[in-house]
Amino acid sequence: MAELPSQLLARLDADDAAACSRCIDAIGEELAAVYAANVNDHREARGDNAVLFGLKVWVHGDFRITGRLEDDERARVMHSNSYSVRIGPLAIGVYKLGDTDEEDIHECFPDASPTKRSYAERNRAQLTIFDLEPNSPLPANARYALDDLLIGHFGNPREGLVRWYVGAPMTDERGVRRWAWIARQPLPALAALSDPARPAIASFDAREPEPLVVRPRPQQQVS
Image (cartoon, rainbow, N blue to C red):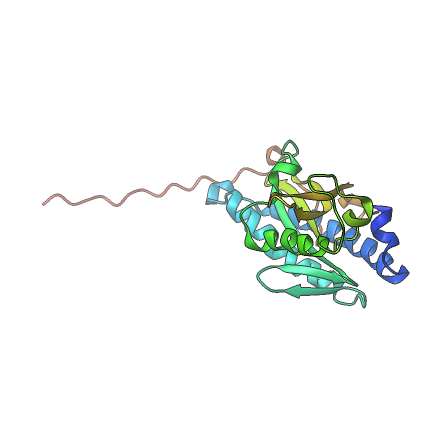
């Protein structure tokens, strides 16, 4: 089950609150499935690397999440430079923020992506409706009123999805981007999912070794 702040859910109507929890659960399951499938397909021997792995997670995640939510009347998947899920007043983006369980969520976001930065900038614009004290922590009524949320996930080609979060990024009065709030989510149990398209992760040492391909260089003729 999605672990979301009660203050966030309380400001939504009952149908949107239920849809928010339901859709975030679904996104977590699909992310775990995408990571597992791409770990099993990752082949360093053919040149697969972390960049390709991250791209495949993004493309396949978009495809699976869009398909998973297409029949949900309360959720709409929107596509622009990236994709986001709209539920009532909320816009929820989905982004890979890092690779390992040791990385600091507060240092991994925001990065240089203009689309990710736009979430923080829109939230800053929304904060102008509140009477906030400079350099003071955001009060709960402002923190959980932000409508632009991000799902940030961490994973790599050896372990798959290692952790994921839901949070609200913001830009403060000094122009510094940070999290207004952040909530770590439990990892979905892949074994509990019945869809055969969601494979379990086979560790590197449990896989059959790939055949070594030797390509001899053509012999040069000496004139």
